[in-house]
Length: 202
Image (cartoon, rainbow, N blue to C red):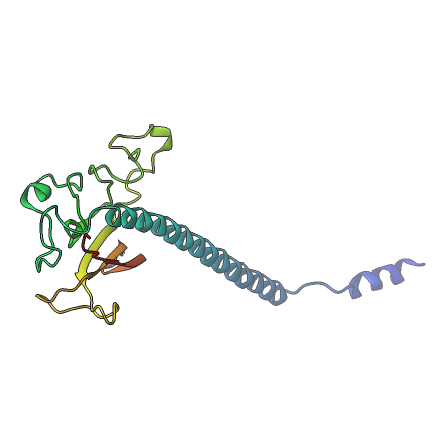
């Protein structure tokens, strides 16, 4: 092979032009952006699922706390038209003295706490503080809120809420775990509804 043939083959070898290189870089950048958006969406979905799982556990825990108590205050009427805690029960600022279901009506607490007023994630479930190594990060529940409503429902249709002043032998306990959005408004991460009935003593 002579020298002129080698030079000709080198000159004819294809290569990238500047335009082709720029197009390739643009395509790579777009593909990278799509990939990052997908990863971001996946992380957001995972975080959302984690929050809802935690909120469901919190709602179940609070519901068990409420319906584990008496239907009504000792030696009081099962058909009181005003459902709320007594003065001494409300004065503590905690749920420690709540002893019947209607004490929880209108309960709101942010950040969420246990019965003794200790923030969830830091409590040990018995009125104390858990070891620092097992506590939730500071501020994790700052925008979360516990809500409870207790109201009478129609005996013939327990999904129908009775108007104020009307009573029946059935009450609904509704528990919600809410999260306030930084831009405003709030949304329910978990919502539970349970119907409880008054059974007169024999």
